[in-house]
Image 1 (spheres, rainbow, N blue to C red):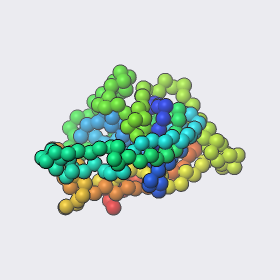
Image 2: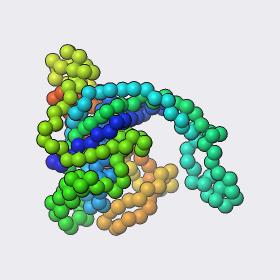
Image 3: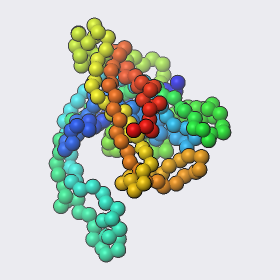
Image 4: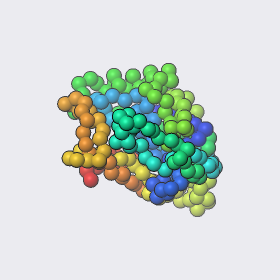
Length: 245
């Protein structure tokens, strides 16, 4: 099991049921944890599977007002502007929205590398590369927690970290006596599937190499439960079912 400590001044793991204004989950989601790990180290020969997310600081929320735009980026519009002129003017499409985000967060991500069938090198090669990069603070791009403006920092754990007791903080004495706290339905990850004439285009890596494919991304959820004071465990069977709609 590989471990990585990550922290940030702010984080926002947006709940999908709040569409117009962002409201964060109380704990980092598995997909966000995977994104941090892939920012530090990723190769087509393996995939990350998150096993545990340990919360090291109590949950602190605060509300901010941010400028956002109403329209999505469009490849067709960008191509038209490149040919005939024009452009996007944020001042004409701006909207102010509230966001309920987290402050002063710190986690330990525990995950495993799973080799893909076309891989020829041993697992130890990739785990050692990851550990060296984590120790040196190297990353393909700067990790972030939910939103790109919420920059994250990382290092290997020093072994003295202890989970925050968010079971008691969020659930009170009853949850503490029970030994667990339900967070309800939480986003697990996006299930990418190749489909002809799919609306989404992405690069696929496999034994055939790298190629652009059309497909769709289906969000998948699970019942998130905090145990041992502040540990979110991700069921293994979620990854076994990944790729099956």
